[in-house]
Image (tube, rainbow, N blue to C red; front, side, top):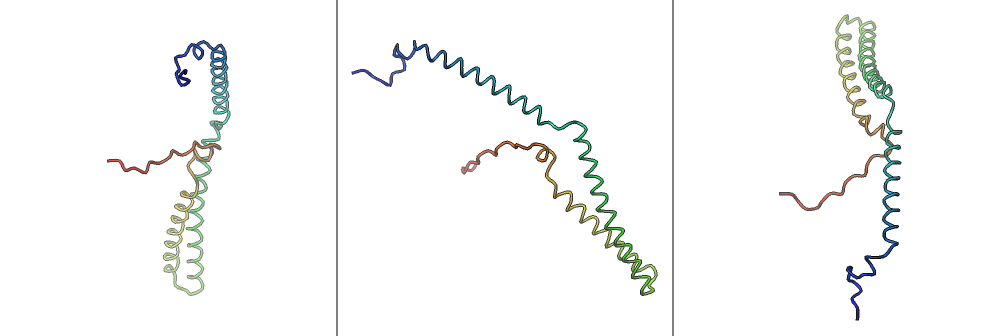
Length: 135
């Protein structure tokens, strides 16, 4: 009887198909690596777009703040005009509008995902987590 699980048999070492298969595998690995690097280069955003996204977010946050403050000030001025309570309504509602503007800015800033996630259409898969605790 022969041992079929023995890797040192002369049949397995001298097979010409394995050398050809190995060469084809190396060629395929090289082509895959070249394609991946080409796709990664094409997926990068233009340098001008990255800076423009920051400006757009800044203007959006500034407009949220200014809108909240202006609306509060206008409501306070309107209440002062209707009730005749000269600066008190304006001061109170201007402060409330300021607070609302800050709150809206904070909400808008947290709503948008980080730039890398927005610009990368294929994020890497998340790593599996171990159930064991580390000491």
